[in-house]
Length: 284
Image 1 (cartoon, helix red, strand yellow):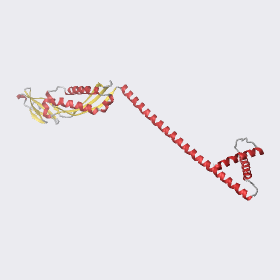
Image 2 (spheres, helix red, strand yellow):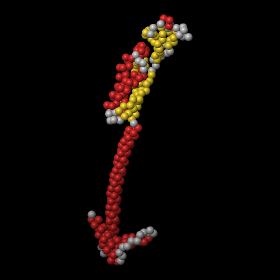
Image 3 (cartoon, rainbow, N blue to C red):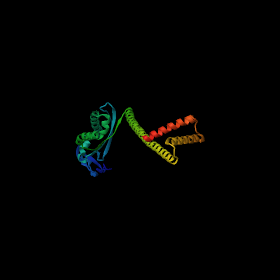
């Protein structure tokens, strides 16, 4: 019905191309327009001004000979002021963009190792965008954004990379565990040394207290009982302690059998040995 009335409607975010006898006449903005077909006017077609996105997957090889698939997303749109160039100069916009993207990616990624390619995704996207801007502006298109969405190596390469990473982390964990065990051993040794040192101090003080007590007992007994010597008092004290020890061993319910020499001569020998040790300790 619109063609019969010579009227055409152009939708929002769209422009139309008007021709006169097959020759470009003008760009029609959104709205209603009159095209008298009997005067040679006709509508050549429509051109969308909306933002469009083209997703591409390009296979290439890195510098260290790893094949990867680079996934890129190109966001572009036609310029209203260059609508005639965008309509007439390109027959397949997406194919043209794809050719430029593949060319730049395959010229850039082979210069990088795989790890560097992951780190320099933004630089690759910037190189693609700069090349597209220069090429597509002549055709009436604007490149809004270029994104390198993913760099996907072969499955075997990803598995190998994961194994390398796992091995490195296990090595770090083993080193940390060894360091922790080393610290525990050192601290335990330091604790044992400190414990033995304190135990030695305690034993030394205990022996000193025993020596002091025996000395006071001997001196007191010698004063209260005239005619006795220090040796007589010491022998009596040691014999008393000897029998007290034998009594405690016999009274213990779970004590082991202890074989010691017994008899007057043995007691005298024990007393002589203990006395000599205590006297030596007191001199020290």
